[in-house]
Length: 302
Image (cartoon, rainbow, N blue to C red; front, side, top):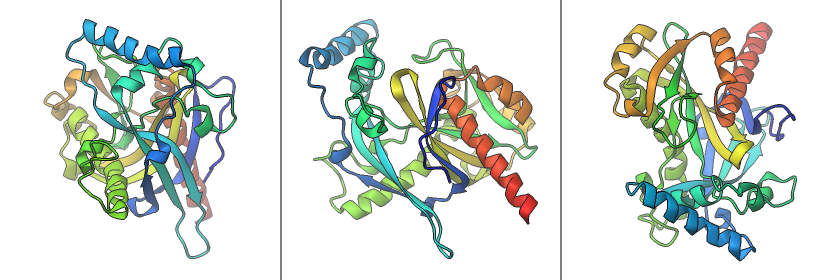
């Protein structure tokens, strides 16, 4: 496990957390608390630009919906002892799409960043909703990659892994003060389960495969793109269907309008495509590559 925040000058991403061995649901927990919400920026003019930008966007596109999202605050890594599993605890707050548009996607987004090497402090004034994406391996050992539609708001035409966001509404969260569950331990458990449930849901909706064809889901880390400091959690899973079967199902996928084409590619082809991905997805490929290399090393030792 690499818990060090890794980046180089040339990469368009930063790996906030890398788990090459892959973590099962029992190894991922969540603390959901308003402590991890965004802190307003002291510059009142900068703060006011959030609603100004949102109002401009809504005028152009009245169908824009201001949904709530989980905000990535921080995480704590617990190394497993000789007889214990490793474990990560994600610290999540609450944000919304309006604040994301007004901070991370603001033309002045860099002004929202605080001067700190600590990522949680550096991004404390940004919305930073936690996205998710999956590296899905088919039964014939190919990886699924989508080409985004030209009608989507972010990165039209780019290659991406299937994904979206874990949804607060799915576990009864509307705000910190309006939660269907008052028991915080139970709520945290439901939110950590939503991390895994949501990525299966996204793959089903975007690719069109049945949920029971997806198995062995593991969490492999968090990548953040440098542009707009957007974080995303990455997962690896297997699909019991072949590339050919999946291609046939893709045409009837619920959210197929979000993409124009599905590719089923080898590792060599994926490496070439990665440079044409948004930064956080290119970081997702780096996380997957670390997982593959760790698997080869453990196979060699066996």
